[in-house]
Length: 412
Image 1 (cartoon, one colour):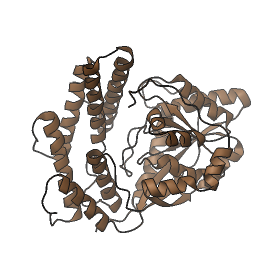
Image 2 (cartoon, rainbow, N blue to C red):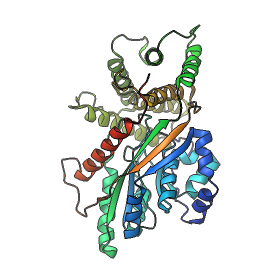
Image 3 (spheres, rainbow, N blue to C red):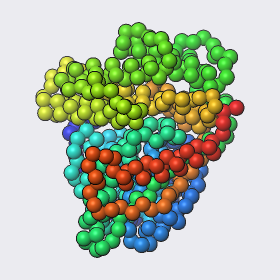
Image 4 (cartoon, rainbow, N blue to C red):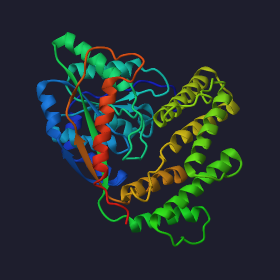
C-alpha cells in the first residue's frame, strides 16, 4: 500500500511500437529468467484467442494469479497470438521503481486503485473492450497468492466490466465481447531436493536452530511453517498456541482483523459466521479491503500526526498479514497429494514473509492454457446470487487448474 503520495491514475502507452520492441529483443524473457526463475514456456490452445481476435471481438483474458510473474508470462500468449495486450495493474506496482513503472506502462499496463473506487480505470477497461484493438487482462482473483493449484474467490468486478462493455459494443457496432479463461501452471524443470534443502536450512539458521533436522522434505517444510506461525503468534498474541495449524491460522487472522477494525473504529463482521469456506475467504478479503480503505482515507484526509501515522502503518501490516495467512490453505501439503511445485511455493512464500524476498533459483516451466471463448451477455447480472458468468469463469479455471496440477511431479 502506497502512503507516500495520494493515488493518481496512470494510463497505458497505446503505441504498438514499444511492446513490439520489447518482444523483438526478448527483454521480458530475460527479466522472467533473472527475476522470477521462469526459464521456458508452452502456450496451449492459443489459436482460440486468435479466432476471437480475427472475429473482431472485445476480448477479456481472465487468468489465475499465483505468482508475480503472471502478467509477463501472459506476454508469451500475446506473442503466440500475434496481438499485444492491455492489463489492469495495482497502483503500487508503478511505485516500485522508475524502470518497472516505465516498462509496465509501455507494455500496456494501466493503474487501478485497490483501496477505493477508480472510475478512470474502470472506464478505460470498458473502452478497451469496446474498441477491441487489443485483449484486456484482468486477474479475477485480484491478488497473487502462490497457491497455483487452488483458485481463490473471484471478484465480481471482472464480469461487471465485461457486461458493461458488451452493452456498449453492441450499441456501437453490433459486435461481441467474450471472456477467455486462461490457466497458468508452473512446473519445476528439475529436481527440487537440493534447492529446497538449502532454502529450508537458511530459514532454520535464522531461527537459531543449530543443525538441520534429519527429516523428509515434507515434514521439514511443515516444521518450519509451524515455527514461523508461532513467531507471529508471539508477536501479536503474546505467546504461541497449540492445536492444528489451520485452527491456529484462522484464530490469528481473526485477531489481526478484529483488533485492527477496533483501532480504526470500523464496524466488524466478526460475529457473522460464514456458512461455507468460500464465504469465509471472501469475508476476510472484504475486511482487509475495508481496513486498507479506512487507512488511506485517514492518512490523506485526516491529517494524522507522526504517532497516528505509525499506528496506521501498523494497521496495514496487520491486514496484509491476515491476507497472507490465507495463502496457506488447508491440506495443500497433504502427503497423498503434495507435489514438488507445492513445496516450492510454500518455501518461497515463507521466504517472502521472513526475508521479504523469495529465492528464484529453482527453474520453472510455464504452461499457459487458453480456454474457449465465453460470450458475454448484454443483460445485467441477476441480483442476490453470484453472476452466472462469473460462475462459468470460475468453473472453467478450476477445471483447467485441477487437470494441470496433475502434471507436477509427486513429492518422492
